[in-house]
Amino acid sequence: MVPRFTRVGKVKYLGWGLGYLGVVGFKVRYPTQAGTFYSGDREGLIRQIEECFKHRLGPGYIPEVKPPRAEARKVYGVVSPHAGYMYSGPVAAHGYCRLAEDGTPGVFVILGPNHTGLGSGVSLYPPGGVWRTPLGDVEVDREVSERIVESSGIIDVDERGHRYEHSIEVQLPFLQYLYGSVKIVAISMLLQDLETSREVGEALATALRGVDAVIIASTDLTHYEPHDMAVKKDKLVLDAILAMDEEAMIKAVDRGVSMCGPGPVAAMITALKKLGSFKPRLLSHRTSGDVTGDYMAVVGYASMVFERA
Image (tube, rainbow, N blue to C red):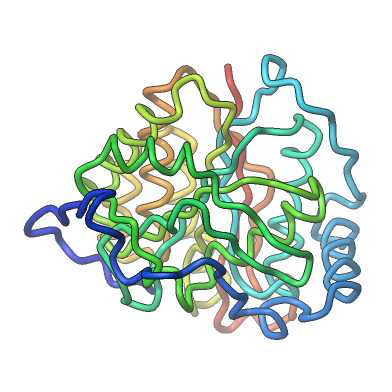
């Protein structure tokens, strides 16, 4: 579980003229989870992703991607898990299936919890860089990244929060498999209190207005509890998300639900409430026990989409 520190003061952005935090000369973010969370070779990874879509706990088929039509798209937010593909991949596939069938967005803004403790309280990966996976390179959208940083007093341009973090990386192969070439903005959240999360969400709403974007919030749910207890605890946060009540979700986590990414989800909800009227849908909720058959100590996973009402 990610420690959710209470903010005692804003992390001030250093400014474009002063450079980025810890990123001098940094261009490529190399994969750190290839060969562990997902297959390390291209062909093996393609097979693994296809198996997630066709899995008994997945959608059951490989989706057909609709062409770009910004005015027709409905999905603007996704909640996606970030465990190893053998555990959470089929659940994640539900969200990516719906996303593919909805069309082709211009940019994906991916929010993930910072499990490593490295970097700033909220770290945006440097504009102009790329993330590398076995399926190729993913470009970081410079314009949207700059707009987000300019809209916030707490988001730093800092690659350290992404250096060994898996929560954003594991989303990328799904996007590459479906869309080929994509643009992203990657934001890693070490601070996940309600105030910080709302501030990040407000910055996203300001920066993304008029932008053809999808926000992906990466999170797993209850960690290492018996299956029945995990399902019961997961319901507390899922009900809050379905009500688009970020405060109730954070309070549930504070009362003992070991969800690791409440900040990304709260930030996404905050942004979407400012960007329009959206209706959440729960597509899949499972635990690792549903995959392994071991229900003694499980991790919960959910896939959700937020569609324009």
